[in-house]
Image 1: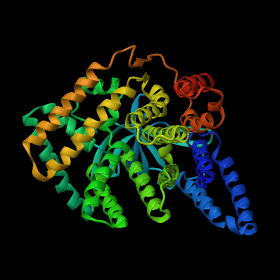
Image 2: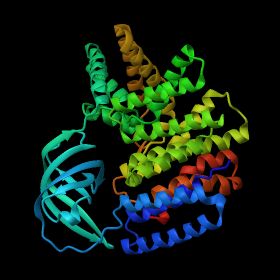
Image 3: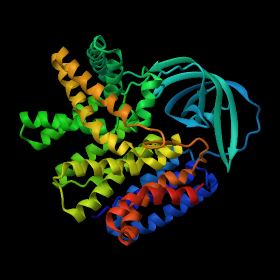
Image 4: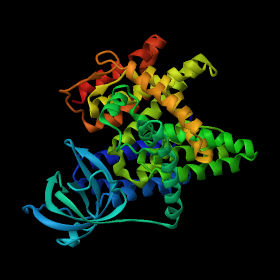
Length: 489
């Protein structure tokens, strides 16, 4: 399998890691940038066949140069905390030392405008409740602090309150908002049967988790099924399959079907307020659709890498987001393990074995990250997800039909499937058997989160051959966890 994009993607990822973790000072990075540019210029002149590759690499480097403000002169401040008023648009939120910080770019500030405008700032908010603040224009007031690390100027605004908030709206939003309200009204009708059912449907279909009780949250957390409430690849995949069946029944032209599916997925993405995990899944599916239409064949690994490159080109800082890391590590592990098994077994129609392979591969791809971020390992999720996911698929299908005919019968079908999911997750979760918690866990270095997915390639290409085949699959999590915890703590 030829994967030319990997020659660009892997170096691009490691450059982002160096900048994000401040492993080198900005001045050294700028010098290296100019060295790379000279090398690229030489390759561009000398090798005609490499010119397109050089252009892509140059665009990638220039994109990092702009995103991280590397052209800005960094100088050290030794100023006391001071109250400031800033205008900012948040791009994402991060959990730092147990606290939630919103990260964004300063659009305007009442001090040091020349230096601070367009700088990245971490904001600790105290009056935002559970409102989603991503991509909203905000005016904040708080205490600004300066921190220097290896030549970088980090800005943090603490005890921060929101003075003004303006949500950007387009003509497309005027269509989406009524549609979203209609969906919420349809889902709310299920509260006549059970109030928890409405909350569950809002979580599993719209990704709205604010009303989920702690008891229900813990049930899904300890069963390894909490991902059902994060609109991600699973949801996008389900919806793709649903619309594929519907449009294939009505239309015969493959290109038209794929275009209509893409439009429906984009509409759904706007309805759920485009969470990053769903955006990444959509880009991957769109990449896969384009490659299928143009090249007449499917290459899932290439589509995954293309979507990863597009996401990181658009927002390099997303590489530090747990959602990004989980999405790509899990999907990559599924693709690598399934590909390795299929090449050896030549079995394509054994549905139960295929489901077990996917569930086990998803566990292998997520367990190190979940262990490091949440101090929990849930091996029971391998079996539980196999049992639960089909019921979720039925629920999502019924929700779509319900949006058209609004039937109480469908609500009772959804309720029955919901009760089965709760029964399975409640009765197959046992502390010390199906899940393990670690209270005094030492955090791993950030570099492990990026090296981790690469370890699957290394394991199957180099070490897998020295072990009995099925034993090697069983040992994957043990070997990888032991290696990373011993080397990178």
